[in-house]
Length: 256
Image (cartoon, rainbow, N blue to C red; front, top):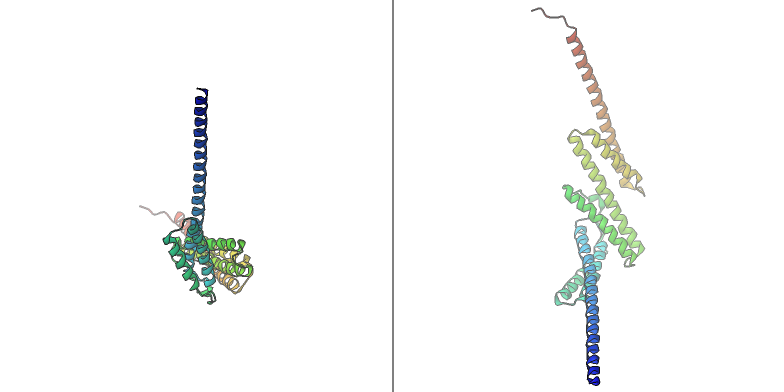
């Protein structure tokens, strides 16, 4: 009888141990699966962010080298996703992206920034500025990972910085012109002063900053001259109305 009880106790203990072991294995597998999902989501976020930036860069006067850097970043993220979760669809996308990168001529001469034209829509302008900032962040990240050289980083970042300055200046100029059209000369003056301040503070100074600063300063001087003329005219008109009121007040009374 005692032997039977012993066997039963051993069996119960074995079941408990087996249950604990199964639970531990399940928890391990769940943690492993969760970590795998986390890795995939991390690389998918990088992929989506980079593809959006690359799409925006296609409409900007940037170099093919920068486009190549973005595509290679996308490829690295896509390969990480594929390794975590292999599939024919992902393999095909990897192959397509590799082919696209090979076709990019990184030695092609970059477009001139002088050909930049500010988008007409304010919403598009905001997205444009956000895209430039995102591109600069991505460049810093790639430099930190040593995926690009310091020389390439400095050259490409300088181009983006110059482009960002042009967007900001042209946006302020657009707002100044709109303010003048709406007879809001005070606001126009503030926009021009802000634009000139940004140009003067920018380092290093180049042909664009100096010529643009001079151009906007002339506009500001013309606006201030116009404001002074308008103020003088307002004063003269006010004095004329005041004299008219006094003449009316002291005019001989009519007899009825």
